Image (tube, rainbow, N blue to C red; front, side):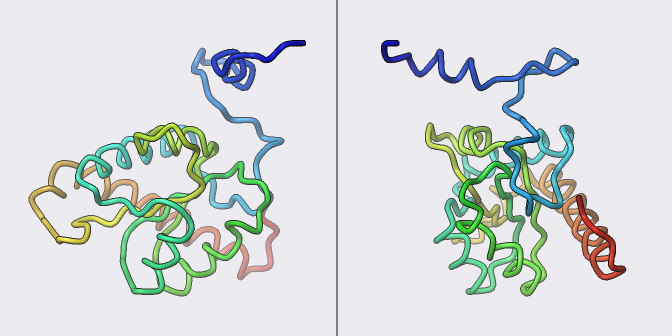
Length: 172
């Protein structure tokens, strides 16, 4: 009953998928508001985009920075973690994104999101702002294609979500 190491705790959280791919995804841990949730392929592509954007410092990390960026009118892609508890920490951000016409997407794990930000700390939300503060276009070229694919996929998911809720459908 002694204290377990961090490595043992992480291994106990990891679930093996049928593909042999290790993921921290557990459907029971996802928040009920985690829609639109990225599929595996989009989540992987989004996290790869975040990794490249972090190298150029084009990422706003955390609720406070993301909300500040949205209120100032920054345009980009908002990535939210789906396994956040309590939900109230994050529940207002999708509304702000919709008001400012900024696409957002949920990825399954805050641990994976934090890992893609080059930090050991889990991150509940971030915003990829191409060009960053200095609007350096040449740095954006490094991940431009990946970013545009993720941006387009997130816009498509957002449109489907809005159309479903406008038609009176239940998102589950």
